[in-house]
Length: 549
Image 1: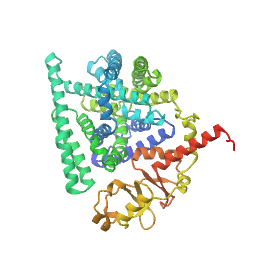
Image 2 (image 1 turned 180 degrees about the vertical axis):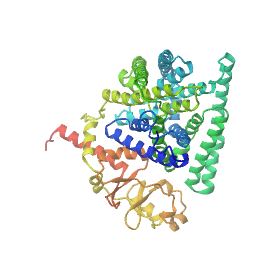
Image 3 (image 1 turned 30 degrees about the vertical axis):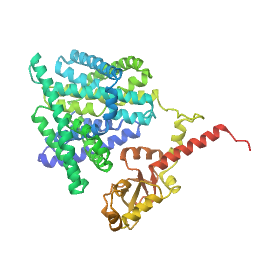
Image 4 (image 1 turned 120 degrees about the horizontal axis):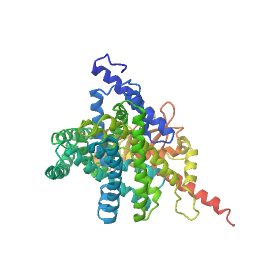
C-alpha cells in the first residue's frame, strides 16, 4: 500500500514527485560509480518503490502527466542532438549503407516478434515488442563511441550511421502500428493508415520549416530574450503534441520530428540548447526513467523469466545478424554487432507510449517484461562493446596509447590544472569593450563572469558580444549582455572528468571553486586538449630515449 494513500491526490503527488526525482538521481549516480549505464539505476529505483515490489509510490495521474511530458521532451532533445541530419542524408545516398541496416533491423524485428507471439499469443503486442527491442539507440551509442575513442574514426562513423537508419526505420514503423491499432486490418485500412502517416510527416515538416522556425526567429528579434524563445519552444511542443494526438498521431513522435527539424536553429544557439538539455536531462529524464518502473506489474519469477527470454533472443539475434552485416561493411564484426544492439532512450519512450495507448497495443505484463529486456540490453551491450574495444591507439609514430593520456589526466585535479593556466574572467560591471579586449588578449572565446566577492555567477561567450555596435560596446556593462549559466567544478575534481563536463555542457570554459564557492581559477576546453598533446609528447620522448648531444 502506498505510504500517502490517505492524502488528497494533489498533495500526495508533490511528495511522490520529490521522492522520484531524488531517488532517480541517486540511482543514476550509484550506477555511474559502478561504471554501468546510469538510467538503469533510475528504472530500478522506480521498480522497487512502485507496485512491482514494495508499492511505496503509486502511479498517480499527476505523475503520469510528468512522465508523458518527459517522453515528449526526451524525444525532442534526442531529435535535436542524436539524429544528425547531414550524416543521415549521406547514408541515404548510398544503397549499401541503407540496405544493410534495414535488412538487419527487419531480421531482428521478425525474430523478436516471432518469439514474443509464441510466448504471449497476441500479434499487436508481438509487433510492438519486435520494434522497441529490435531497434537501436543513437544517443547511448554516441556516448559509448566517445568513451572508447571511436567517435572520430571511420569505423565509429559507420556504426553510428547504421544505427541512425535503424532508429529512424523503427520510429516510422512504430508510428504506422500506432495509427493502425484498433482498426480492422484490411488492405484498405493499411493503405489508408500509410497515407495518413505520410501526410502527417509532411505536415510536421512543413510546420517546422515554414511556421515554427520563422516564428522563433521573430520572437527572438522582437523580445531580445532567450527566455521568450525558450517558452515559445515549450508551448509549440505541447500544442503540436496535442494536435497530433487529436489527429491520431503519437505526440512523442511529433516531438521527435520537431527536434530533428530544429537542429540547425538550436546548433546556432548553444546557450538555448543547453537550457533545453538542462530542463530535460535535469528533471524530465530522471523522472521519466523512474516512472518506467512505476508501471510495472507485480514482479514474479514468471515475469523475470519472460524478460530474460526477450533479452536472450534480442541479444542473440543482434550478435548473429550484426556479425553477418559487418561482413558487408568490412568492419570488426563484434564491435558492430554489440554497437548496433545498444539500447536506452527512444526505445523506452516508445514502449511507455504504447502502454499509455491502453490494451489496444500492450498490457502491463508485456510492458514489464519488455522493460526488463531493454534494461538488461542497456547494461550488457556497452560492457560487451568495451570489452572488445576498451582503448584505441592514437595515430602517431611512437604509438602512444590513449590509456597513457587518460591516466595522466586522471592523476591531476582541476585545481592543479587551473594553477598552470591564466584565469579568464570579467566582472559584472566591466564595460563590454573591456571584456572583449580581455578575451582578445588571452585568445579566448569565453570568460567566467565574477561578482564583487570573486564568486562565479555566469559565463560570457564571445559570439554574444561581437554583434554589438561600437556605441553599445562603449556603454553596456557585461551584466546587460545575454549571459550563459556558469559551469562550476570542485577543486578536487579529477582532470579526466573535465572532458565529460565540456562535452555535456557545451560551454568552453569552467570555473574551479573551493568548498566556499570562491573561484580558484578557470579552465578552457582547449587547455585540456593542450594537456593531452603535452602528455603524448612527453611519452614519445620517454619511448625514444635520451637524444645525443
